[in-house]
Length: 314
Image (tube, rainbow, N blue to C red; front, side):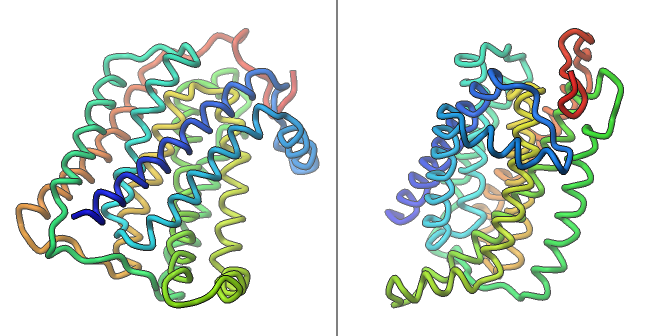
């Protein structure tokens, strides 16, 4: 049980660091010109991001959160870690109100409470009979799951960029950005889980470094994270963080929890009561996504004056 609480504490640290970093990035992006993701403009976008100290501070916090996530995944199963990481949704909703002055509606307040309930259910679901963390997955099955997920994530996440109407930056676009980047980050999380297996065993630092550099998971992680990050920056700049971030987090969390538990052969609790609690935590996380998506679809679109130019054109 001490290991469980240490794992949950580290996962909470990862979620806090990562999501505070996102809010810091959002603050920095509001002061930048509209980002343009046309292919020949991407290097200029990356250079402008790396030249902004405020954005770099947020990015550093996100990297710290990812590092904590890799560590905690070495000794806790996906079905324990990921709902805790998803609890960062509650933090984002609060910070978007306090720091970014975005209004929290009744549905969003319910989502905060729902994510808190999810974490409580998760902690109550752990027991000695539950399975441990898995560290290895079949490369063939991993590719069969990851490749279609990346393609679907790119198609959904980039779909708002292809729309030329003024409303394409509205709440529905925020949901598209969120679902697309969530799938990409979910595949990146599978790669992180794969890399965590290299840390297991009596290897010294040089063997670990060589194993990481030789692993295809490193390059899957880098590619998916880079694509998701660029889409995320446009989403944060043009849409409400209180819509984009929760939808992305919950999509990635539910995807990673289901796919990761199966691919890495992790076992759910054997006790029917504890299994019910853990499945309830997963259902609550999914409910948050559905509730936020429905809310976004019902919100009025922004007026033309409030909408940035398509693909960076003013």
